[in-house]
Image (cartoon, rainbow, N blue to C red; front, top):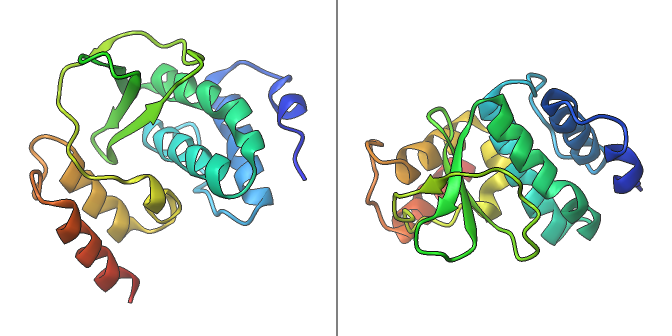
Length: 166
């Protein structure tokens, strides 16, 4: 449905990379806020692209690294996990912390992330984080140090999600 290589052949400007990724997501029915130039939206689009690669079309893998790099260029904090696990962490205070595996070393952004993983898997909720403020707040508060429920267990987040989605 979407030619990912053609889509990303046009422009390297971070705003355009995120906008084109949002366009691709919307072609598959994933609603994206219109402010794709905002760092917080860029992080959410990167996370949604990562999920879409696993659940919708593996072509999204071709753009995942570019969207992550664009989110950093737009102002998100990012860095490689300090334990050498090949995970890139991406943070914005309005969204929390997301993490991405990069088995082919495609993410070009540098930096180190010294915080441990929160223990809260959020990838499967990426579409809801993108489109539902209540879900976004839950994951924001659970995944960043200083968040209102930082340190909460994944099971408690899952139960909260069930209530939000009911």
